[in-house]
Every structure is written in structure tokens, then in C-alpha cells.
Length: 340
Image (cartoon, rainbow, N blue to C red; front, side, top):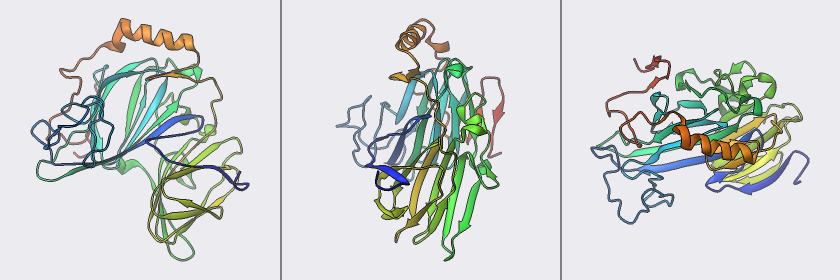
């Protein structure tokens, strides 16, 4: 314990540690070059471990992609993904025939539940200029009663996500983008219906916080049992409950107390994750997160047998046509086009 209000200050790696009900968080920041005709990078791929390119080279990575960066078709069962795209675009395709393109502030909330395959590709849409990408992907656990929920996804379009803007006593501005949860009268859009976040009593919060240089903000209190973690991912230095914290560090916060964050001499960018714990056993093996080892073995057996519905797309790294704007097409045939 560093003091009574915060603990476990630790540097951030590629995969960020989280607390129950979350499983982990990853922050992708890739400065992709101009795109080519295939919507991959118009640059040499020589020297890259294609298919497993997680080493930053020239400011970007291909991940599991070989032509287009991203994550070609892969299965999940037993949890949810919340994908927050700050810059650039993600193309979604899945084994239920659903598809979408989202970015520049949009959030996809996907319940893997009983199991599905999906592809998450990063199409480089611009041929005449660079294609920077920045996103968070957060894995949120499901309780045992929802592990086999019907797979589902919903879009939280940027235009529908509330941004709480406040000024401190010195007129310095704080902006909080509320992806899940509530602050005062600002309430996030509904998450997926089987999500642990769907019940307000679980107090799940996913907040992106931007603080002007020199700003001071008081984090509102929650219930004592809530787990709350703060990730300081860009800036110089902040103070949390009086404790200096350098950039690219995380810390756990006592949730039932208001805690003051004081920013340094540059704008600060933070992510806050909180929620009441599910408090059940967690057994994870790769893309499957269940409660017992036997359930993990069953997940692999089910996937080998059914492929979770198979793959209805021509390519495992499916992307949509370059000219397509933001859209979501759901497995029930419903389609959303927020730019129209």
C-alpha cells in the first residue's frame, strides 16, 4: 500500500493487467503508412514475421495479418470484447454473417457467449496519406450463467457516446467519455443484453479521461466492493491522491472514496476500468474463458466439431470495399449506417 487510497502502481506492457470482472486490456497504437490496392500497407513487408508480427517496426505491426494488418478469423467463447477505436478503422466479419466497419470514436461491444468466430482487420483506406490506428480492446468476463449466451454484438457509435465536460476551479478542462456506466446525469449507451455491465448494480465503468495541463479532477466514489484501476497512457506526470505517477503506469484505487487527480504540464490521457467482481473461478486457454478446465476441453471439442457456425466469407482476413462508410450489419439482417 502506497497510501490508503491507491496501491499496486506498475508499468504498462503490451497487455495491461486488469481486475475482476475484466480479464485484460490491450492498447494498439500503430502509425500505418499509405494503403495499397488491397488496403494493406504500401510498404515493404520484408523482415517481418508475417502471421505473428507483434514487434513494432517502422512504427507499426501486422499482428496476425499477412496482407492487411489485424486479426483474421479466430474463435471465442465465454466472455465479451469491448473495442474502442480512437483513430483509424476496424472491419468486423463473423461466423454468423454479421459485419461492420467502425472507427474514429466508435465502440463495438461483442458477446462471444456460446461461441463464434470473428475477424478484426485494420483496412488502410487512405492511399494518399498515412493511416494511423489507435484502439483499446478490453476483455470483460461473463458469469457462469451467461457463458453460453447467444453470441451478439452491438455498436456504440461515437455520436451516441456521452462526453462529460467539466472545468475545475482554475478553469482547466476535463473531458470524460463514458463508454460504460454513469457519472452524474451522463449515462453510457446500453451494452450487450447479457453483459455483466447490463445490470447497473454491478457498477461497471469504462471511462476515457482527458485532462488539460494543470487540471484537477475528483473521481466520484463507488461501492466498496468495486474494483477500480486507472491507466495513465499518455502525458508526463499526474498526482493521484497526492502520489506522483509517471506516464504509462497503472494503479488500483479504493473505489468508495473520492480521489483527486492532479495533472502536470501537458495534457493527460487516462483509461479507468471499474466493476463489481463476478467472483467465480476463471480458467482461460487462448480464446476461451470458462470456469473449469473441463469446460475449456469442451470448448475445443465443440469448435473442432462445429467451427462455431463455420466461416461464410471468402477470405479469413475479410475486409469490406474501400468506399464503404461506417456500418453494422447484424445476424438478424438489421443494418445501421450512421453516416447516411
